Length: 410
Image (cartoon, rainbow, N blue to C red; front, side, top):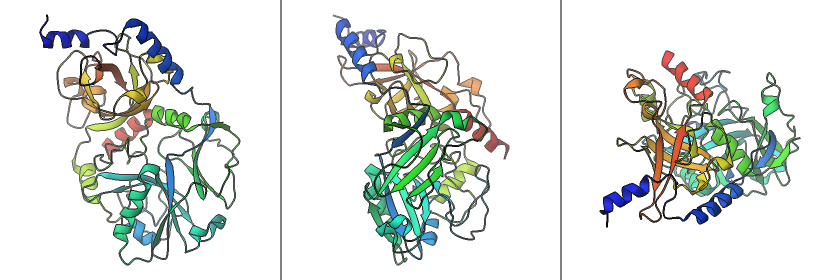
C-alpha cells in the first residue's frame, strides 16, 4: 500500500475538483449543480432584498449622534467626485448615502445605507417622533446593530427601532442599457412612500429603493429575485453584509469602502477613525475584496469575468465554505487570500494584490511575486474521500483600479 502522503497527493492531483466520487455520480452532480444555479440576471430588473432590514433612528439629536459613530459625513453633502466632501458640517444631508459602523479597533461591524427623512414621511408611524434617518443593514445583523446604536446613545435625544418588512421594504433597480446611454437613468417613482438612492458603490449598480408600507415600488423593470441582484453585485466586485465584510475582522479599506464612497476622510471623529486614517495615510493596503471566477481544475483559466453556471461543472460556488484559504496550484507558498461567498461560478474573495493581480503596490515591484502564469486553488474537506478543490481567478474591476491609481497620485 502507498504511504498516506502519496495517496493524498495523488488524490489532489486528479483533474476532477471533487475526489472520492465515481464518474457516473460526478456527471449527475455536474447536471444538478448547473441546473440549480440561478439564471443570468435580466438587463433591466427590480429585486426585493429580503437580506436587508431597516432601523429608524429619530429625534432631535439624531444627526449629531450618527455623525459620531459612522464613517461618512451625516451633516453635510459632499462634492460630486469620489470622497470630495466639504469639511464644515452645515445641515443634515437631504439625500441617502453609503456608510459603515466600525468598532473601536477600526473593524467593520455593519455596512449600511442611510436615508434622511422628515417626521411623518409616508405616514409611517415609526417616523413621527421627529426627523431622523432610516438605516438599512444586513437583516441577520439588524438586532445587533440596534443594540450597538443604543450602547452609544447615552442621554442623547434619540429613539431607535427596528422596522418590519411590511413597514419598509428594500429593493434594487437597474437598467444596463440606460446606464450606458450617457447618463440616462431609470424612471423612478416620486412619492412620499418611496425613497430612492443611486447606489454609489460601483458605476453600474443601479438604484436603491425603500418602499414605505406594503407593495412594490412603481419601477418599469422586469421583476427578478435577489439572486439576480447578488450575481450583478459579485460581477461588480461589491461586498455586502457580514458574510462578505466579516464582522469585527474586515478592515474598511481592504473591503474597498473608501472607493465605494463609504468613508469621509475629512470629517470629525467617529468610532474606529484612528486606525482607518492611519492606514490611509501611512499604511499599504495589500489585500482587497475582488470579484472571482471559479473553474474546474481540469479546465483552462477564463480570460474574462463572466457569470456562466455551466463553467463550474462539479459544484456551485455557494458550496465552497466561507474563509477557505487560497493557495497556488501545485505550488507551495504563503496564502494568497481567502474565499468569502459566491453563487454559480462567481463570487468574492479577499485577495493579496501582489500575488493574485498585476497591481503594483507603493514601493514594491509586482514582478517579484506576481506571475501571470500562476493559477490558484481552493481546497477544503478534512477526509480524503470528501476532499474538494476548485481553481479560482481574481479580477480587478475598472472602477476599483481607477480609484487605487487616483489614490496613489494624492
